[in-house]
Amino acid sequence: MRQFMLILRENPQDFAQVTPDEMQRIIERYSAWSEALAGRGRLVDGIKLQEEGGRVMSRTGGKTRVTDAAYAEAKEVIGGVFIIRAEDYDEAVQLAEDCPHLEHGTISVREVHDLSGARAE
Amino acid sequence: MSVPALVDRLFRQQAGQLVSTLTRIFGAAHLELAEDVVQEAMLRALRRWPFEGIPERPAAWLHTVAHNAALDRLRRDARLRELAPHAMAALHELVDRAASSDPGIGTPSDPLPDETPFALDDQLQMMFMCAHPVLPAEARITLMLRTVGGLGVEEIARAFLADPSAVAQRLVRAKRRLRESGVRLAMPDEPELQHRLQAVLDVLSLIFNEGHLAHAGESLLREALCADALRLARMLARHPATARPEVHALCATFCFAAARLDARVDAAGELVTLEEQDRSRWNAQLIAGGFRHLERAAEGDRLTRFHLQAEIESCHAAAARFELTDWAHIGRAYDALARIAPSPVVAVNRAVATCMVDGPAAGIRALDALSMERSLSAYYPYHAARADVLARLGRDAESAAALRTALSLNPVEPVRRLLTRRLSRLQALAAAERIRG
Image (cartoon, rainbow over all chains, first blue to last red; front, side):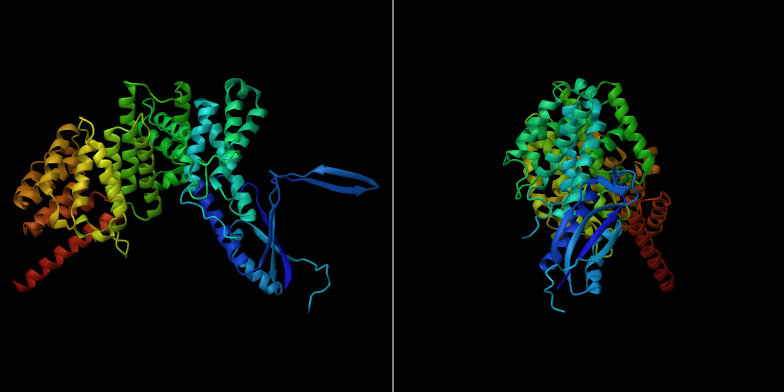
């Protein structure tokens, strides 16, 4: 089975006003979704990125520039990623469809290149 | 591996507890800072747990993160360190305690660290601050729900059918008032404790009643208000300084009334009267809890209105069928209540008890004797009660008129539908009479 990366993007301001009860309900929805995937052997990993912009590096004329990337002011940041198993893009999209993140932001689905090269086609 | 499920209302309860503890540590003037720090910790859980899973001990996780966030604030703010000189040490102690996996805090089987003595103290002190006499009555309720209850502004506004910006304003003014009056987070000493406790119990009663009122929709929120009032009352009942008979009486009243919440609404969402409720749907556990509290309430020698209310509720709870209700006992309790805490509600209920004991003719005399009370003329339950008693006497036309008066006073939606159903029944009867006649 192939592996796909779900890249979850959101607006960092979105949850600022959420009440404790709502937070709990949102967490419960996510965990129900990931539990269901894990139960079917489809969840490989979940990775949370730190809440910061990190650094952006670029090089022009042989000179490397490192800048702090904006986080709080950003309209959209990557919150984290999930890696899932699916037959193909259609199935990956279908598995991501129930992800509660779609209530709050966008999901990009990208196939992870299989380095072993041993995948049966 | 299965993910540990979150206990119902865990976040809300932990928010209440953490805000209370951090306010104690930062000082009462920094209530808002404490709220910010707690919101920050909960947001961190919201952002991490979906990816990393729910931790083994969710409450302990929230505590550690909140305490660390509080330490960060202190490190960044020299003025705050000056104003709260002991905060740093107190926070370090809390972080160590949580790290040492204190069995009292957040084990998976008992994830609610309410029981740790300092956490209970902190929340009780916060309750006393929220019900402080420098605050107007409405502000006390709002602040109590926001801080110890962990409800958001939006939720409070929805529960009270109020405008969210008005609720937010009320909170800002209340906090400013507390700051300006130099109110400290502390348990009041005797003899002040007695009347300050009364104020706390009044706030809890109002919160419970608001939840118990039959507003349209929002049943989850109503349950949340009742559950919160009961949870906070039970905290008072557990603490040696406040475990007084009247506190147990209030807990008993809440337990009995909360036991009927489910049975009060039928499958179609319509209101079911006490008489028509399916009593097998009453919550037996809450009723048993109510009787345990009632026993403890009897230990004192003072008879408060909370005692009388608990007694009345216990009569309903003890009756296996409506016909078995001990109305004479209820009537005597209302007589006593009318002496020590007279109100329109008490007056009407007392007359209803009279009707049940001495028959509808006596009931209507009792109700009509109240007709001169100005506070009752605009109180729809008075007219609804009259309609009921008049119908029992077969005075249908007068009963219909009383129903129309009650309906003209804008009762809450489920009550309006209930009264409308009764009115149509009377009208159908009258029409049938005319055809026959």
